[in-house]
Amino acid sequence: MLSQITIPQEIIPIVEKIENNVRLSQQDAIALWNHAPLGLLSLLATQKKRLASQNKVFFNQNVHIEPTNICLFNCLFCSYKHNPKNHNAPSWNLSLEEIENKAKMLAQNALTSNITEVHLVGGVHPEHTLEFYCDAIKAIKKQLPNVDVKAYTAVELYHVISKSNLTIKQGLQMLIDAGMSAIPGGGAEIFDQTIRDQICPDKPNAKQWLEIHQTAHQLGLKTNATILYGHIENIQHRIEHLALIRDLQDITNGFNAFIPLKYHNKNNPLGETVTQQSSVVEDMKMMAICRLFLDNIPHLKAYWPMLGKQNATLALNFGADDLDGTITNSTKIYALAGAEEQNPTLTVQELQKLVQSVGFVATLRDTHYNEI
Image (cartoon, rainbow, N blue to C red; front, side, top):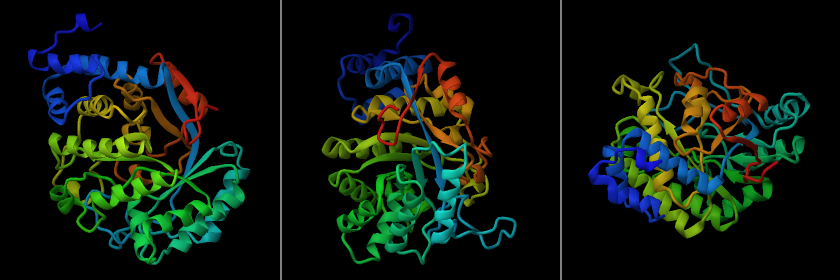
């Protein structure tokens, strides 16, 4: 197949590295971004995807519970945080009883009674404590005892544990004891501090985000990692971000999946200056570069509520091997930012059809990538 593609002279040595399973440098990844034809990136990334997961594309049966949209941080890219000036977008802050009732309704609803994962993430409410975080997990597990609770971004965790006067290890252990079995990848945004100072200046920094995940890995928790791309960063910032993730994975082997998250510019302050979103071509290039550079992370997720069903399916030909899950219209984060999927819901059958339409085998999994 490679013989049918014209490879620019300047990246021939890089392609040979990929063919021989030699790790790419940051400079290699930037060169691929700048010079590799899209068809070549698709072919190379698909080869690497097949080495990691053969013909399989994974998905799960999951829902989100978002406890609150009240947040003490002021991220310019965020459309989810409640704005007191917007009277058409009310705030919410679920009590423990309301969280338990949501879990009870999930257990009783035929559409969600077979879920294997609850994704528990929200704003960083200034009044929530570590005990509240633990009790929220317990409330879900009371109604859904066999479901994995993948809970709280590193940003939420770092803040709430820090104000509890416990160590990161002690705080995470409390959450594990309460029933938390995985951590999502959110809050990473872009690690470069100069960019972070502009788009999320008051948020925990890269070192603190990585500390949460490294400690979780040491305690036996598997986690995910993300990047937010397509705003004011450049390709060098992106690759430096990926390198920090790859470096930690070399140490801990604790990341299950990486998720490139596309910035959407509706209903947030950053959108006043970032008026153009990344193109589909850029989205596919980003997916492929992540697969080729992150050689030690087994799974690459095309998060369909963010990309849209069609583009997420296209991403399966650029190295992605996971489509997240059914979701059942339970998350507002990307819908509020203007994403195509305003009521994100897919059935198992619809997910299977999407995967099969591009020649892969749809594979139902749990949170830990055990096949069901």
